[in-house]
Length: 333
Image 1 (cartoon, rainbow, N blue to C red):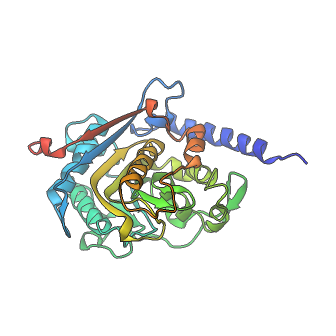
Image 2 (cartoon, one colour):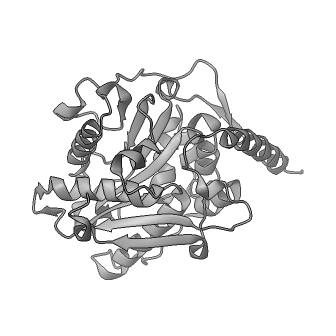
Image 3 (cartoon, rainbow, N blue to C red):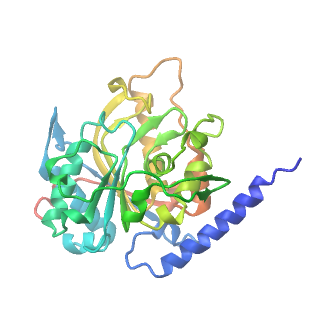
């Protein structure tokens, strides 16, 4: 019996990419270099702001976090002026979903503080509380009081996803933009739970149907969900909170396998960011505590599929990675 799934998937990808290309033609902000470069004439920029003074013990250092955020926005957009940098990513007319990692969010001790400082920084830049909606964090800081209240539940009409149907969350219709804020963490089924995974499982009503088979490792389902125009066309920026990294055992959180990484990473390209994240997880698996019965190998096939879909670049030859010490910019940011 012939397998008809591949032709159906191919036609679906072509249709979605054509729709996405039409949306790109009228975009007013420069946030999709990774998928707007079919000839490979440019590289995807990935910035890592690394500060060994970002926190000490249980105390986070707010000026360091804010400096890393503003420095990253400036370097990503090419605007030295912080106001212009963020304005080229999100406008003051946008309703922006700040999408955090739903899985293990309480275990990553800096997500709560990270959200608080991110909001305070936006308010300092003139954005209003009603510009933002918080997704993925339920115990909110005081700075989040007055932000948009999300609509819970799922759309009435199902959406075709790759080769299946599922329902998208109602809050997607409330927002005009998404800033994706995952962590880097190991996942024993899909390899890494980073940028793309953060915009997949929690975005469908019945994720178990896409997630239950260890043989496919989330491929191609994570890419199928991320390429949906309802999600893809609203994503403006990916900010990885890598102050701490979980290199083994995820999605269940065990502090035995947690390491202080003390970085914030930014890119317009989620595939490139996730590949950088895999390399860090591999490094820590080789150098830190690991169950001796398991090898340090780590692989996420869905990232290759995501590159084929046009979601970003996987190969390091297509990635312009830069590690920056934000303390060299104390007088600027």
